[in-house]
Length: 614
Image 1 (cartoon, rainbow, N blue to C red):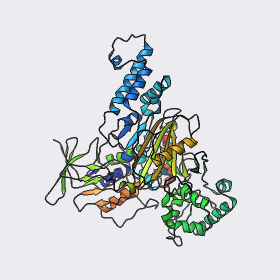
Image 2 (image 1 turned 90 degrees about the vertical axis):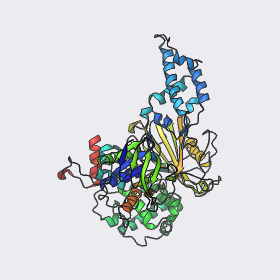
Image 3 (image 1 turned 90 degrees about the horizontal axis):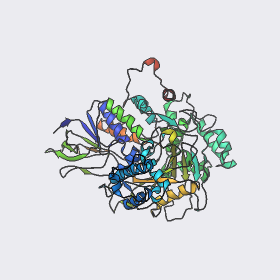
Image 4 (image 1 turned 180 degrees about the vertical axis):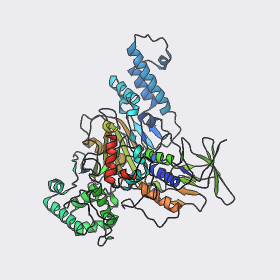
């Protein structure tokens, strides 16, 4: 039996866990990182169609009997014995093609329906499976034959052009393993219709002075009030990167860090909404700033003035950093999973050992109840003093039974839950790669809470490696506090949040738009705190709260908070929107990087990525 001695074991390869592992390896610790899945990423995985259907936690809502019946109709009422028929004539190419497709689909179905997970985290449904004739077999063959052309994010994330995530990728050299692309223009903004018969109109959220003047989202009085408020903020030097009162960031500013972080402001602890109201902002302007630009949810009512301005700054400082777009965001080519891949490769360079498809079986402790060894599913014995859990873990009777995702009937009603509805469609809904924010109507009375969270939309296509040609992946996301969604059909689903997301899609999709795949992922995004259990070597990573839902801003502060605690730097406090110096955590100088070629400005470094990849 193989034995390995390490300082730390990290379970799960999500973004948070990957950064923790790399940072600890950077300090000289010997780290082993394991993941029960066969690919990196955990909640941030990016999956092909085949990987999706083969994943243990995925359930296909189409029944096997119905699919088999449809397949038999498609190939001409042949039964399973046709697959073993070796007497097919060579000239009967049409029949051979049908049999080959049938066999391939049946092999995949055998994997799909022979799973033991009775409580799936992801459910999916293929709508062409319920059709008959040539169109159905073409659709089925499309997904099987072109599986690798799809990159489906379990939780799609966009990255601010200027952010801790970009800084850490650049400092660590992780940018060498990832290719970013800019998104198309400003964030799109609209309101959820009060009636199902009404439509949804999306417009650009204004991000500069001219855009404010042209915006159809604001009345003349609201435009004047907004510009005056920005004038006052600029005069106070807390938003130093605005150009002529605009919300557009200037990369040439020599402002100091205090101004960049909105530190030099008056009454920083004033409530954010009270601050906006005191400046004459209407409810419409408040919603546009808080939800459409600062990307807040129902939590905006708890923000301080400093917190709101930090979000506004992050948005403004990120515009135009990457490429020529007026968007504050960049998006990883081939999906969010590539961000994880970048950090795990950095970890590998630093000496982290990785084992996929592996989990903890049992734990052995000493007389002081401190952990000494772990037994893994691959048969290896790991001698270690610490395990950091970024994944749900259930070990043997002698060890840990920690499953922070597990719910009980008494607690599931009060849990925040992130819902991601994914659809593969044949007609675009948004104008290219972009994000849209849909704010709920304040007077909705449909049995749901009046403090419903906004809904976020992302569309990705073949141009960024997310879908096959002429196909698009459309994500619809929100947060709620309802129980877990359990249903057997999207059409008959009675879960209020899933129905809400489907209604938004149906409202926005053109009549000729067809969806060939629906996928729903709902899981806890709870406000867990970091826990180090009584010095027994067990550390539980806090889970991100998904506020905001789309931007990748919470993961690095969570990871570095844990690293600081483990290294005795608990006095260092890092928040998602504070521009902190991260060079102490992962700063790797490559041999090919000379001092003469070193680029200090984030904008210049990002431009080098564009130049490198074209």
